[in-house]
Length: 307
Image 1: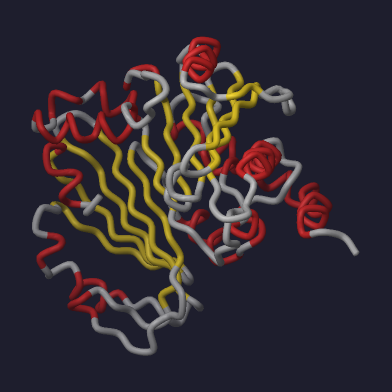
Image 2: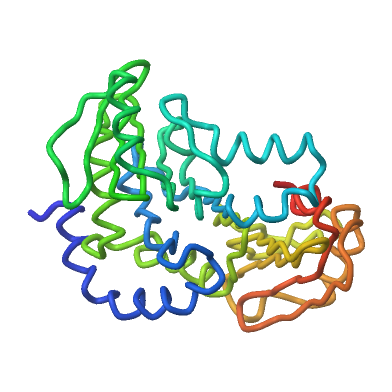
Protein backbone atom coordinates (compact mmCIF):
# COMPACT_ATOMS: atom_id res chain seq x y z
CA UNK A 1 0.00 0.00 0.00
CA UNK A 2 1.50 3.42 -0.93
CA UNK A 3 2.60 5.67 1.92
CA UNK A 4 1.25 9.15 2.52
CA UNK A 5 4.55 10.53 1.18
CA UNK A 6 4.19 8.47 -2.04
CA UNK A 7 0.63 9.71 -2.55
CA UNK A 8 1.73 13.32 -2.07
CA UNK A 9 4.57 12.94 -4.56
CA UNK A 10 2.26 11.33 -7.07
CA UNK A 11 -0.13 14.29 -6.90
CA UNK A 12 2.54 16.97 -7.09
CA UNK A 13 2.62 17.08 -10.87
CA UNK A 14 -1.10 17.81 -11.02
CA UNK A 15 -0.68 21.09 -9.13
CA UNK A 16 2.69 22.08 -10.57
CA UNK A 17 1.29 24.44 -13.21
CA UNK A 18 -0.89 26.33 -10.72
CA UNK A 19 1.96 26.65 -8.21
CA UNK A 20 4.30 27.98 -10.90
CA UNK A 21 1.75 30.60 -11.93
CA UNK A 22 1.20 31.63 -8.33
CA UNK A 23 4.95 32.04 -7.84
CA UNK A 24 5.12 34.51 -10.70
CA UNK A 25 2.22 36.55 -9.38
CA UNK A 26 3.71 36.86 -5.90
CA UNK A 27 7.36 37.44 -6.81
CA UNK A 28 6.98 41.21 -6.84
CA UNK A 29 5.40 41.55 -3.40
CA UNK A 30 7.54 39.14 -1.45
CA UNK A 31 10.95 40.76 -1.87
CA UNK A 32 14.10 38.84 -2.62
CA UNK A 33 12.82 37.53 -5.97
CA UNK A 34 12.95 33.76 -5.58
CA UNK A 35 12.02 33.78 -1.89
CA UNK A 36 8.42 32.72 -2.46
CA UNK A 37 7.64 31.34 0.96
CA UNK A 38 4.46 29.54 -0.13
CA UNK A 39 6.58 26.94 -1.91
CA UNK A 40 7.93 25.90 1.50
CA UNK A 41 4.62 25.38 3.30
CA UNK A 42 4.52 21.67 4.01
CA UNK A 43 1.50 19.41 4.43
CA UNK A 44 0.70 19.44 8.19
CA UNK A 45 0.50 15.65 8.12
CA UNK A 46 4.26 15.51 7.49
CA UNK A 47 5.12 17.44 10.67
CA UNK A 48 5.77 15.78 14.05
CA UNK A 49 2.46 14.80 15.64
CA UNK A 50 0.66 15.05 12.29
CA UNK A 51 -1.44 18.13 13.15
CA UNK A 52 -4.49 19.00 11.05
CA UNK A 53 -3.28 22.56 10.54
CA UNK A 54 -0.63 25.03 11.66
CA UNK A 55 -0.23 28.84 11.75
CA UNK A 56 2.16 30.56 9.34
CA UNK A 57 4.28 33.64 10.04
CA UNK A 58 6.41 35.16 7.27
CA UNK A 59 8.27 38.45 7.19
CA UNK A 60 10.93 40.32 5.24
CA UNK A 61 13.68 41.49 7.64
CA UNK A 62 15.59 43.30 4.86
CA UNK A 63 12.52 45.36 3.92
CA UNK A 64 11.83 46.16 7.57
CA UNK A 65 15.50 47.12 8.04
CA UNK A 66 15.18 49.71 5.27
CA UNK A 67 12.50 51.46 7.35
CA UNK A 68 13.90 50.69 10.81
CA UNK A 69 14.06 54.41 11.64
CA UNK A 70 10.27 54.54 11.53
CA UNK A 71 9.97 52.12 14.47
CA UNK A 72 10.46 52.83 18.13
CA UNK A 73 14.00 51.80 19.09
CA UNK A 74 12.96 49.14 21.60
CA UNK A 75 10.38 47.75 19.20
CA UNK A 76 12.90 47.51 16.37
CA UNK A 77 15.30 45.67 18.69
CA UNK A 78 12.54 43.16 19.43
CA UNK A 79 11.74 42.75 15.73
CA UNK A 80 15.41 42.23 14.87
CA UNK A 81 15.89 39.74 17.69
CA UNK A 82 12.91 37.71 16.54
CA UNK A 83 13.78 37.90 12.85
CA UNK A 84 17.53 37.32 12.66
CA UNK A 85 19.07 36.86 16.11
CA UNK A 86 17.06 33.75 16.88
CA UNK A 87 19.78 31.22 16.12
CA UNK A 88 22.29 30.37 18.84
CA UNK A 89 24.59 28.65 16.36
CA UNK A 90 25.18 31.51 13.90
CA UNK A 91 24.76 35.26 13.44
CA UNK A 92 22.72 36.80 10.65
CA UNK A 93 21.92 40.45 9.90
CA UNK A 94 18.55 41.89 8.91
CA UNK A 95 19.76 43.39 5.63
CA UNK A 96 20.93 39.96 4.39
CA UNK A 97 17.67 38.09 5.11
CA UNK A 98 14.96 38.66 2.51
CA UNK A 99 12.42 36.28 4.01
CA UNK A 100 11.92 34.36 7.24
CA UNK A 101 9.02 31.91 7.33
CA UNK A 102 7.87 29.87 10.32
CA UNK A 103 5.31 27.09 10.39
CA UNK A 104 3.99 25.09 13.31
CA UNK A 105 5.92 26.99 15.97
CA UNK A 106 9.22 27.22 14.11
CA UNK A 107 12.19 24.89 14.32
CA UNK A 108 12.30 25.14 18.12
CA UNK A 109 8.65 24.18 18.53
CA UNK A 110 8.31 20.94 16.60
CA UNK A 111 7.73 22.81 13.33
CA UNK A 112 9.96 24.31 10.68
CA UNK A 113 11.36 27.57 9.44
CA UNK A 114 13.08 28.79 6.31
CA UNK A 115 15.51 31.71 6.07
CA UNK A 116 16.28 33.09 2.59
CA UNK A 117 18.57 35.90 1.55
CA UNK A 118 22.10 36.93 0.72
CA UNK A 119 23.99 35.48 3.67
CA UNK A 120 27.00 33.18 3.23
CA UNK A 121 25.77 29.60 3.54
CA UNK A 122 29.30 28.20 3.80
CA UNK A 123 30.01 30.39 6.83
CA UNK A 124 26.78 29.24 8.45
CA UNK A 125 27.83 25.63 7.83
CA UNK A 126 31.15 26.29 9.56
CA UNK A 127 29.26 27.82 12.49
CA UNK A 128 27.11 24.68 12.71
CA UNK A 129 30.19 22.47 12.85
CA UNK A 130 31.61 24.59 15.68
CA UNK A 131 28.27 24.28 17.47
CA UNK A 132 28.65 20.47 17.43
CA UNK A 133 26.27 19.78 14.59
CA UNK A 134 27.15 16.64 12.64
CA UNK A 135 27.30 16.94 8.85
CA UNK A 136 25.30 14.24 7.09
CA UNK A 137 25.05 13.16 3.49
CA UNK A 138 23.92 15.93 1.16
CA UNK A 139 20.22 15.85 0.21
CA UNK A 140 19.29 17.23 -3.20
CA UNK A 141 21.55 20.32 -3.35
CA UNK A 142 21.45 20.93 0.42
CA UNK A 143 24.24 20.39 2.92
CA UNK A 144 22.53 18.70 5.88
CA UNK A 145 23.46 19.03 9.56
CA UNK A 146 22.03 17.33 12.64
CA UNK A 147 22.30 17.78 16.37
CA UNK A 148 20.63 15.88 19.21
CA UNK A 149 20.25 17.71 22.51
CA UNK A 150 16.88 18.33 24.16
CA UNK A 151 15.41 17.43 20.77
CA UNK A 152 16.71 16.58 17.35
CA UNK A 153 17.44 19.50 15.04
CA UNK A 154 17.95 19.22 11.30
CA UNK A 155 19.41 22.08 9.22
CA UNK A 156 19.73 22.20 5.43
CA UNK A 157 21.78 24.89 3.63
CA UNK A 158 21.95 25.69 -0.06
CA UNK A 159 23.66 29.01 -0.79
CA UNK A 160 21.60 31.76 0.85
CA UNK A 161 18.76 29.43 1.89
CA UNK A 162 18.59 27.70 5.26
CA UNK A 163 15.77 25.31 6.15
CA UNK A 164 15.40 24.03 9.71
CA UNK A 165 13.19 21.43 11.36
CA UNK A 166 12.90 19.94 14.83
CA UNK A 167 11.25 16.87 16.23
CA UNK A 168 9.92 15.43 19.43
CA UNK A 169 9.05 11.93 20.56
CA UNK A 170 9.75 9.37 17.86
CA UNK A 171 9.61 11.89 15.01
CA UNK A 172 12.64 12.32 12.74
CA UNK A 173 13.72 15.92 12.14
CA UNK A 174 15.84 14.93 9.14
CA UNK A 175 12.85 13.27 7.50
CA UNK A 176 10.83 16.46 8.05
CA UNK A 177 13.69 18.51 6.61
CA UNK A 178 13.83 16.29 3.50
CA UNK A 179 10.06 16.56 3.05
CA UNK A 180 10.37 20.33 3.39
CA UNK A 181 12.99 20.45 0.65
CA UNK A 182 10.86 18.16 -1.54
CA UNK A 183 7.86 20.48 -1.12
CA UNK A 184 9.92 23.45 -2.26
CA UNK A 185 11.10 21.46 -5.30
CA UNK A 186 7.52 20.56 -6.23
CA UNK A 187 8.05 16.84 -5.58
CA UNK A 188 5.60 16.77 -2.66
CA UNK A 189 2.27 18.58 -2.55
CA UNK A 190 2.19 21.77 -0.49
CA UNK A 191 -0.17 22.88 2.30
CA UNK A 192 -2.27 24.83 -0.21
CA UNK A 193 -2.57 21.80 -2.48
CA UNK A 194 -3.63 19.30 0.17
CA UNK A 195 -5.97 21.65 2.06
CA UNK A 196 -8.52 23.60 0.01
CA UNK A 197 -9.38 25.86 2.95
CA UNK A 198 -5.79 26.99 3.35
CA UNK A 199 -5.36 27.23 -0.41
CA UNK A 200 -8.42 29.46 -0.65
CA UNK A 201 -7.09 31.70 2.11
CA UNK A 202 -3.75 32.11 0.36
CA UNK A 203 -5.43 32.79 -2.99
CA UNK A 204 -7.41 35.62 -1.37
CA UNK A 205 -4.38 37.12 0.42
CA UNK A 206 -1.61 39.45 -0.69
CA UNK A 207 1.45 38.74 1.49
CA UNK A 208 3.51 41.80 2.35
CA UNK A 209 6.54 42.56 4.50
CA UNK A 210 4.81 40.96 7.48
CA UNK A 211 2.26 38.19 6.95
CA UNK A 212 0.38 35.74 9.15
CA UNK A 213 -2.16 33.12 8.14
CA UNK A 214 -4.18 30.45 9.90
CA UNK A 215 -7.23 28.31 9.34
CA UNK A 216 -9.63 27.60 12.16
CA UNK A 217 -10.97 24.44 13.68
CA UNK A 218 -14.73 24.14 13.84
CA UNK A 219 -16.31 27.36 12.49
CA UNK A 220 -18.64 29.36 14.73
CA UNK A 221 -22.39 28.78 14.43
CA UNK A 222 -23.26 32.40 15.18
CA UNK A 223 -21.89 35.86 14.45
CA UNK A 224 -20.80 38.26 17.19
CA UNK A 225 -19.44 41.06 15.04
CA UNK A 226 -18.35 43.26 17.92
CA UNK A 227 -15.93 40.59 19.18
CA UNK A 228 -14.81 39.53 15.69
CA UNK A 229 -16.61 36.19 15.64
CA UNK A 230 -18.27 35.38 12.32
CA UNK A 231 -20.51 32.51 11.40
CA UNK A 232 -18.78 29.91 9.21
CA UNK A 233 -15.44 31.74 9.12
CA UNK A 234 -12.68 29.22 8.35
CA UNK A 235 -9.52 31.27 7.78
CA UNK A 236 -7.79 34.57 8.48
CA UNK A 237 -4.66 36.31 7.25
CA UNK A 238 -3.05 39.62 8.15
CA UNK A 239 -0.55 41.51 6.01
CA UNK A 240 1.45 44.72 6.34
CA UNK A 241 3.49 46.40 3.60
CA UNK A 242 5.84 49.11 4.88
CA UNK A 243 6.12 52.18 2.64
CA UNK A 244 8.09 54.60 4.81
CA UNK A 245 6.21 56.64 7.41
CA UNK A 246 2.99 54.78 6.59
CA UNK A 247 2.15 51.12 6.04
CA UNK A 248 -0.67 49.42 4.15
CA UNK A 249 -2.65 46.80 6.03
CA UNK A 250 -4.84 43.97 4.79
CA UNK A 251 -6.98 41.60 6.83
CA UNK A 252 -8.60 38.72 4.93
CA UNK A 253 -11.36 36.46 6.25
CA UNK A 254 -12.51 33.35 4.40
CA UNK A 255 -15.78 31.48 4.87
CA UNK A 256 -17.46 28.20 4.02
CA UNK A 257 -19.55 29.71 1.23
CA UNK A 258 -20.19 32.96 -0.61
CA UNK A 259 -23.42 33.38 1.39
CA UNK A 260 -21.53 33.83 4.67
CA UNK A 261 -19.51 37.11 4.58
CA UNK A 262 -21.73 40.13 5.26
CA UNK A 263 -20.39 43.62 4.81
CA UNK A 264 -22.50 45.17 7.55
CA UNK A 265 -21.07 42.70 10.11
CA UNK A 266 -17.55 43.66 9.07
CA UNK A 267 -18.39 47.35 9.33
CA UNK A 268 -19.59 46.79 12.89
CA UNK A 269 -16.39 44.90 13.70
CA UNK A 270 -14.16 47.76 12.50
CA UNK A 271 -15.76 50.04 15.08
CA UNK A 272 -14.15 48.14 17.97
CA UNK A 273 -10.85 48.96 19.67
CA UNK A 274 -8.77 46.66 17.48
CA UNK A 275 -9.06 49.14 14.62
CA UNK A 276 -8.36 52.34 16.58
CA UNK A 277 -4.98 52.77 14.85
CA UNK A 278 -6.32 52.02 11.35
CA UNK A 279 -7.05 54.82 8.86
CA UNK A 280 -8.95 54.97 5.56
CA UNK A 281 -10.64 51.61 6.17
CA UNK A 282 -12.23 49.92 3.17
CA UNK A 283 -14.24 46.69 3.15
CA UNK A 284 -14.85 44.43 0.19
CA UNK A 285 -16.53 41.05 -0.25
CA UNK A 286 -15.60 38.70 -3.06
CA UNK A 287 -17.33 35.34 -3.06
CA UNK A 288 -16.44 33.43 0.10
CA UNK A 289 -13.79 35.93 1.22
CA UNK A 290 -13.87 39.41 2.73
CA UNK A 291 -11.05 41.95 2.92
CA UNK A 292 -10.57 44.83 5.33
CA UNK A 293 -7.83 47.20 4.17
CA UNK A 294 -6.42 50.45 5.46
CA UNK A 295 -3.24 52.19 6.54
CA UNK A 296 -1.43 53.00 9.76
CA UNK A 297 1.69 54.94 10.78
CA UNK A 298 4.59 52.51 10.46
CA UNK A 299 5.56 53.10 14.08
CA UNK A 300 2.22 51.49 15.05
CA UNK A 301 2.13 48.69 12.49
CA UNK A 302 2.83 45.77 14.84
CA UNK A 303 0.33 47.03 17.40
CA UNK A 304 -2.26 47.44 14.66
CA UNK A 305 -1.98 43.87 13.44
CA UNK A 306 -1.45 42.35 16.92
CA UNK A 307 1.70 40.64 15.71
